[in-house]
Image (tube, rainbow, N blue to C red; front, side):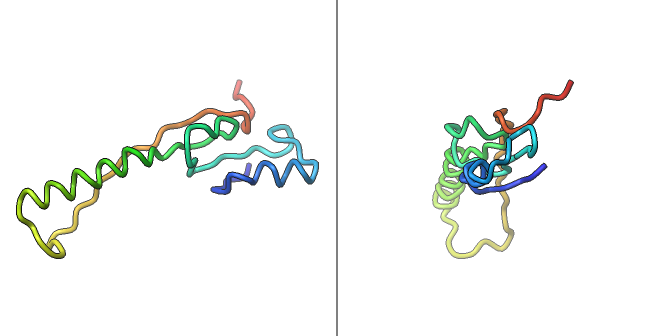
Length: 91
């Protein structure tokens, strides 16, 4: 099994005659968009991440917070598994 964040990795292997998923199974931990339906992996949902960042910034402005915060905050947006055709089905 191979992991990659390059959307062109499938194309490169297929050009070399590698059969995916029969010979090589491929997973992307960073799918750029949901339209990458052919690759199995985790869609990071960048729209939701951007929305959360804007909400955080607006909250800081509304609280009149300026400069670098004394206590760092972390906002997490959970990725979603996106099945594709680059992994063999488990039986």
